[in-house]
Structures are given as structure tokens and as C-alpha cells.
Amino acid sequence: MLLLALDTSTRHASVALCEDDVVHGEHIWQVGNNHSVELLDHVQRLLIECRMTMQQIDAVAVATGPGSFNGVRVALATAKSLAFALKKPLVGVSTLDITAAQYWLWHGPVCAILEAGRSELYAACYTFEQVAESNGHMFYQMHVLSDYLLLSSQDLANYLLEHTKTWFGVPGERHVLPTLFCGEFSSASQQMLQTVMQEQCLFIQGGQALRRADVLGQLALRRLRAGEEDDPLLLEPLYLRRPSITTSKRKRSLLGNTAQGQDADQSQTEREEGALRH
Image 1 (tube, helix red, strand yellow):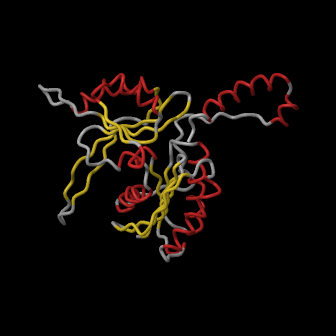
Image 2 (cartoon, rainbow, N blue to C red; image 1 turned 45 degrees about the horizontal axis):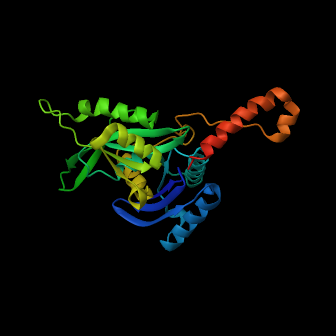
Image 3 (cartoon, rainbow, N blue to C red; image 1 turned 90 degrees about the vertical axis):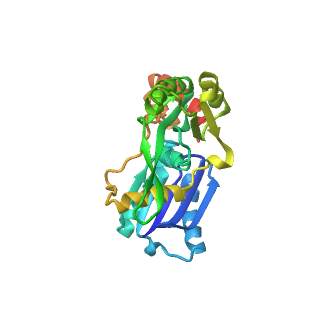
């Protein structure tokens, strides 16, 4: 089954062509705010490099967020359009799930995090279970330990200190491996997590932390093999927070001073988010 995977959740974007355990090709690039301009171009280039056509695709997978409001929406709209046009199955996977799935060899808790603006983080916690198949193949089953969270870095650290002993503590010993943080996050967020958690945290950043669309593809293929897929009409972005809406200058002049005052507050919020938004 040939699957096209799309992820433009943050400033780092990725597309991949996967088939069972084979990755035919993958593009990872820094997209900035040009998600809608660059996504289809990279998909077309990938198909050409792999000597394949759009008609050969059997399924489409997409990262559903959380992340950049515009970025998540671009990938989701593109994936839905392709699924409709090709009449192929569509599978959505949380961006946090994709981020965590790359670190399946860690035996302790894995916490995937992304900057959310307003000094908050998107986060979710995971563990991985080793599973042997009848054919001798080994894979790691991912288990989600928490809800998808929207917390300040300090609140997230306190949340983890409270819950990891319950999740991983050995009776009589209460020994817990450090939480492995992965994803895209600022130095300020890392510093706060380290301050609160001390030796109970480790971090993966830089090139090792980049999300890869082939990981999204493998997660989606497992769902498809289990007979699961999403309805393109019902699949929605996982935002965790409603996007802030600003009023255009043209509308502002028509709405009067009251709208101007409200819009000034909203614009300030937008600028604050823009400083951290991917």
C-alpha cells in the first residue's frame, strides 16, 4: 500500500512516500510561514524523484496538530482534497504522537512538546511497549499516558513530577527514569522544565528532534492495517486553543471606536503569539 504523508504543523515541514516498511522518499525542509505555497511543490517533486504518479497513491496521511494554526490547516485541507479526488482512505495522526513515536527505544516516559505561544506548551506523554509478532518481527506499541495538554512549562513540569511515579514507579522502590522531552521548544521552556524537574528530565533538540513524515506514514499504515480510517468530512484540526481573530482595517473603520478598542487587544495577543508561533 503506497501512502502519501503530509506534515506542515510547524516551521519544519515534511512529506514522504511510504509503502509498508519501505520509505521511497522524503522531503524535510524549513517552511517558515509558506506552508500553502510550498507544500504541493514538494509533493510533486517527491513523486518525480520516486518515479511515481499521484494515481498510484493508495492512501493519504496527515498531521492534525496541534501546532501552527495556518500550518495545520494547510496540510489538512490538502490531504482532504487529495483523498476526495483520488477516492482513497484518509488517516489523521496527532503531531504530538508523531513527535514522540521517533523515540520508541526510550524505556521511561516520553513527553512531546511544541511551543503554543502565550508562554504555554502543547504536550502529551507516552510510553512504548515491546511487542513480538508471530513472524519474529519486533515493533513498539505506543501508549498515550496523558490527555493532550496546554500548560505553562512550570505547570507541565509539576504535572509530570506528580504523575510519572504513578505511571512508572516500581512498588517498594519508586524509581523512575527521567522524562525524555522531544519536539520544538524554546531555551526558556527548557530552562524552566530543568529548574523544576532537576535530574528527572532529558532533552532532544536540533536535527535529532525534527519530525519525519515517514514516521507519520508508519503510524497511519498501522491504523489502516487495523481497518481504521478517518472520514474526510469529519476530520478536524487538533488545536487545543481557539485561534485569535483580528478585524481588518477596512472593517474597523465601519465598526467604529468600540471595535477598534477590541481589535487593539486582539492584535496585541496576535503579536505576542507571533513571537513564538511556528
